[in-house]
Length: 116
Image (cartoon, rainbow, N blue to C red; front, top):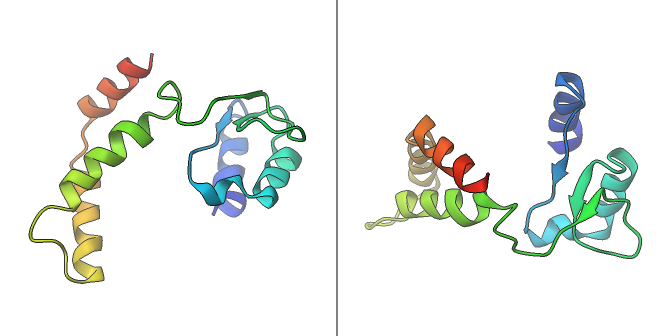
């Protein structure tokens, strides 16, 4: 999804962006790091390694750069995983869709204000 859709969209829209890596362990695999170094040299904020070509390196679990990790996903979980818990994949998908649709502009503005 990243290489086939997101990266081309970002480059097409403006090319003026910095990619910030999130905390998911699979995203830190050496293949991912090499891909980002090749395709986004000096355009990403990553975990510090001796080999990467990141614009800058940032500490893990930094609340300064991961509002989605600390706010949005927690908010989504509290809306999706309420009792009774979903019993099937379709019900889980429906709850996730409903939770995402319930996030309004004011919520995003609040997150942005806190980040700023």
